[in-house]
Image (cartoon, rainbow, N blue to C red; front, side, top):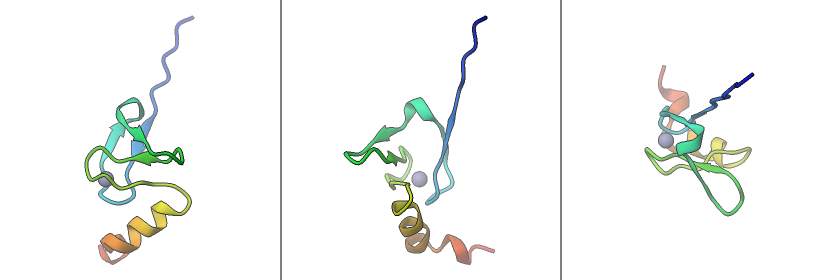
Length: 58
Ligand SMILES: [Zn+2]
């Protein structure tokens, strides 16, 4: 049975949603957003959210 699993990358910084196979990775293995260039990860995601003020967008 053929089954193609497509996963998506959800950018924490700009909110872009891209196919995971279109996303590049940095030297630490964190995905880099093709739309804004932000890296997301355990540390980078929190940092990106703080920089762009996502918390304030209510
Ligand atoms: Zn982004």
